[in-house]
Length: 172
Image (cartoon, rainbow, N blue to C red; front, side, top):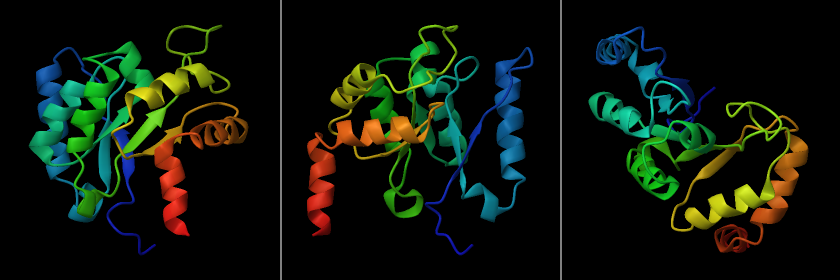
């Protein structure tokens, strides 16, 4: 497809299988057995049960790939503030090699279990997230069930963010 190395494939580290240390070791070993063309495309994402941001960052240091920050998963399986996690994950990205850091954003479905994604974007929650992330540049991927509807709402809301306004002004 002739894409540069900023085109990424996000994966979770996986299960713990009774021994997190050995599971991480297996993940690292298997990662090193992959072809370089695949390794340079991968990013690991924190999850809501097994591997928090700090654990993903430890793995990232061993295998030299970025950590994609998942806000919703961090709120469930948390290892510090969102602002701290954003900063640490952003540092795992090499702008030339990896492009702009990516973030998965979603909020909790208030009618479901604490692990259920919302059907629609919660603009108040999104507003709080944006306020905590003002000094960072990143691409957001929405993990929300009504997809386009929430994307349009998020874009309309984000247009009030100076970073977004400056980006569009730079295009002119």
